[in-house]
Length: 87
Image (cartoon, rainbow, N blue to C red; front, side, top):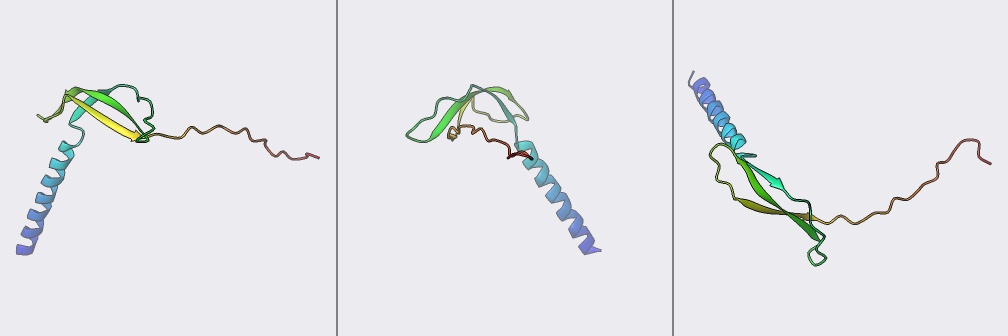
């Protein structure tokens, strides 16, 4: 009986912790600009976002800046399909 109570308490604690973590995700909503040009020195491009909405009394920054790696430009190659019956 004590083991059952302990397991129930542990389950409730885990549920409360999971709920708190889930609420922490995506609390701040931002509106982002377009991606900037690739910075050759760092190999990244950046954009800035301004706060659109804050949920659950979150403490959000008014503006944020995010970066991502530049993707190399790939040229599309026209490949000829191998057809049946070609000589």
